[in-house]
View 1 (spheres, rainbow, N blue to C red):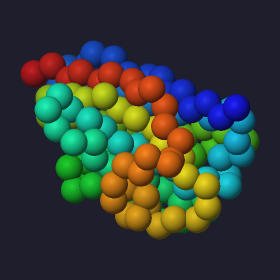
View 2: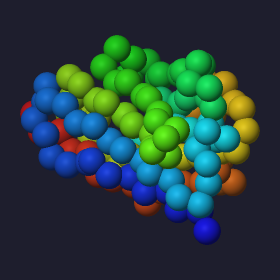
View 3: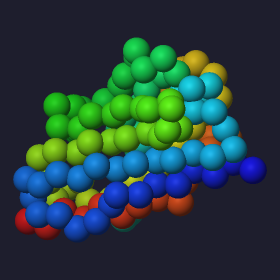
View 4: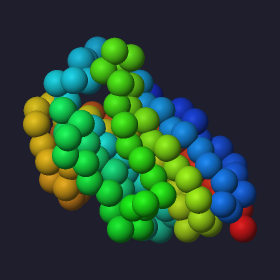
Length: 128
């Protein structure tokens, strides 16, 4: 049984940092393109950072480019999102996703496919 579990969210002041982790069980993450989406209240789920199976093609949305860094550790079956210079508009539920096969980061992040594996999300709240 596949499980995707996010952790690392919390409350932080504007300008602060957080690192999210996504641990997958029941699958070998090196076989999956993976990414981070977020969803704020009243808004659609958006792809913000996605990475291919080889960690070569990486996509960032304009809203997080230069502040967030996605990375993966195959040995630990874990995906990370380092978030720096956080802003109140980064407040959202953050979701990890995995899709089997090679996908360009921009493709995986283009829309939240229902047939991806998804975690339950971790809340990030940035106070001003």
